[in-house]
Length: 366
Image 1 (tube, one colour):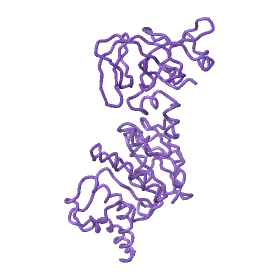
Image 2 (tube, helix red, strand yellow):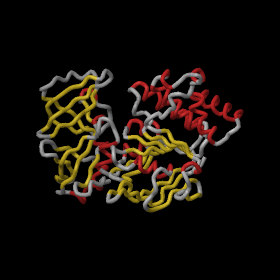
Image 3 (cartoon, helix red, strand yellow):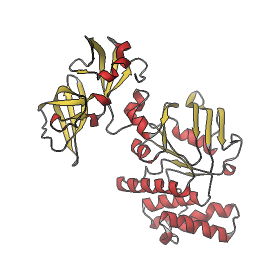
Image 4 (cartoon, helix red, strand yellow):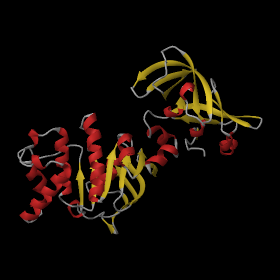
């Protein structure tokens, strides 16, 4: 068990900068998720930590030890890859034990570790089977078990659920979270799926184009994104964005989106006073747009006239795609709403949860 530090890590491939001056301190026993779109540098950062890539600049520390020049096998880490990479001719037991046999671990100790890991993962009854006799979810558990038996200081996961179907992803996601609680070890997990990140992480590091955008707890990333990218990446469906400007009328402030105008709550006026008559990007999440008939009480509800473009009934809610002028945006509304394509309706924005971003820098205005 150990902390991990990325200290000004940069990784270049020729003229391409895959990771750009990455600074993250990961506490002992923490579950940190690196999240971002494909090609953003998150897997490269993980491979640098594993020793599978050399860093171009900076230091990587595991505990208090700089590991830049230490061979991967000596870093006391275990990695679970996207592909299961199981030996097809070996049993589950032998696949899990293979790394320990290479290290000449005593047979009794190998047996103990494999059986203990199999019990944790619920695959005791599969130890004699070959990989071809297993489902995708079972193979993934074997791959995780192979990492567990090493009893490393740090576990690394590189998109381990992407080959599983939707139901198995949810189930395995819960199993990995439970595993972290049982093992009390540092977990670093890479994914492009923000739902995985939100449900599993102690903290999330959002990366884009090799740059760390924001690192914090899932709830703070959701409630207080630092910039437009984080706001749009965290949350499903994504936050709605509108080109707008801040308008002052007497002692009131409005966000003017051209085809709609909504009043800024009095408690938040001071934050935007310096941006009066300046272009901004207005953001509001789909769950903060309501059918007025079913809007929660005690919210700062501002009406917006629009037309229904598409409806998607989800059972417990309806996703409604709405149009105002050239803007198309999505709302998550109460399933009792009787909305039909082409209807002209009024929805309300919960302005207590509004977001505003500087149009040039894309930084959040608070």
